[in-house]
Amino acid sequence: MTIETNDKCMECAATEFDEDSNGYRCCRQCGTVLSNTVIDYGKDTNTYSDSEKDNDRWGLPKSQLIHDGGLTTDIDWRNKDYSGRSISSSMRRTMNRLRTQHQRTRIKDAIERNLVVALAELQRLASQMELPMSIRSEAARYYRQAVDNKLVRGRSIEGVVAASLYLACRMVNQPRTLDEVGHYSRTGRKEIGRTYRAIVKELKLQVPSADAKGYVPRFCSTLKLNSKATIEANRIIDACRADNWAAGRGPTGIAAAAVYLAAMLVNQPRTQREVAMAAGVTEVTIRNRYKEMCATMSLNPDNPSTKATT
Image (cartoon, rainbow, N blue to C red; front, side, top):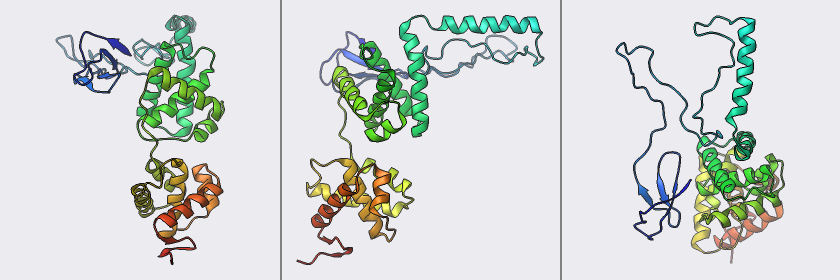
């Protein structure tokens, strides 16, 4: 949520701030946190009677993943009374009518109707990609900002949701490739990329560059390599980065080649086809990056455990 206050950022003197679901206010220009006051949206366990028994107020915390924040009351789907006994048939019909009416009144306008569909799609896509709740909440926040800036008009809901998830992964340094997001989404890679660029441009976000080391743990896990291979692959990437060789090359190709080379160095070799399937790149890309890495580190491509002969 974007707010304008009379306060100014201590770093860049901007007056526009973003406030997340936890109450943190951050400068939109430089990201400086304005206030460290945190609002607790969790359960309220205060009691309001002398007996102090069964008088606590309970409820779900505020969530970006529910169109109304999760602050409304739901009617239980079980047809039982407070003591657990089944209710009569006439009362059951009454409760069914109340549930239907309650669901209709929870959606007040077209924006909330859009959020209901979009957040359900976001949960489906994130579940198939096995993303944690923190990334899902960030993606929901970016989608809400896209709706506020009217970026959904003329675009499919699925495309904007997929782009928001891709953006959230990039922002928390747990990147996913466009091909991977497009594989689980109902839209294609090109549409997700176009929508992603439109969101970044309109929201004026500073997206960090994708780091090849961010892909290494996932590739190693898919290939069933142990921690030694992960450490060795990160060491190879650092060595190539120190030589400025990796500049201008795709991070996924670099990570895939580093994993391929590291697997051979720790005596857990994998074929180029296996690494290409895990990384979503071509075997030609892996082969080219691998040869360049060996040349940079003075290794023999045919036997990387030995130094290249001059």
